[in-house]
Length: 278
Image (spheres, helix red, strand yellow):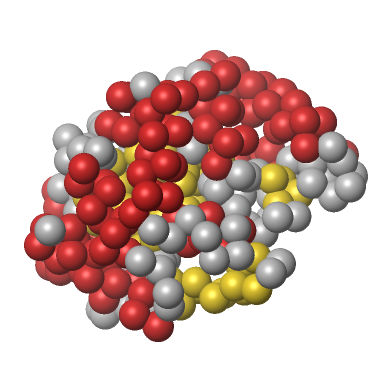
């Protein structure tokens, strides 16, 4: 189900959860007054079907929308074919188990350029996602694959590339990580006008549907001329998050805002309060 408004939540279990598991995380997200949580399969998809079924029941009971972050070890442009096959399998497993949890959006970092031309990498990523889409369709796994905008210039995943994938492939839409765009541009992409420009690009290429069904990551970030170094809490960073919230309001954006700050719940609440206060 697509959210009918903008929901705020945490990347993984909130820090104050009683236990470090997803069931406890969902309970805590609800207690905090947040609306969504991203299941972090970043070290591998180790969850079984039985647990996934319990998470589905819990998320429905608590009315918390779930998404999934697939493993970090994904490179659809690896020079080694077995690593490409393993990468596709990791996205597939994240989608299969995620869908059993009730998660619709499956986020992943797509690839590295290595020394290849950007268009060549795009074609390879496109072809692999097209095949994966067919496999998911054959197995009636209904998810949206979300290639994430990445934080370094060496990584495939610019705004333009990921939006283009969304225009050319069914069941594929971008995950827009505003912190990554800020780091990738070495400090740009950090004003109201630049946030507006990003949303205008989404609307131009994907239509109103693109703004009605967004999946976003927001956090503070430390960066250098080479891009992302590490995530920070919002108030320890230079990210102009209140201007971002204003742009989301002005474009009537719907979907999920997942906070990836070290203090994931504190900053998710800060974003929600800022958004509601504008």
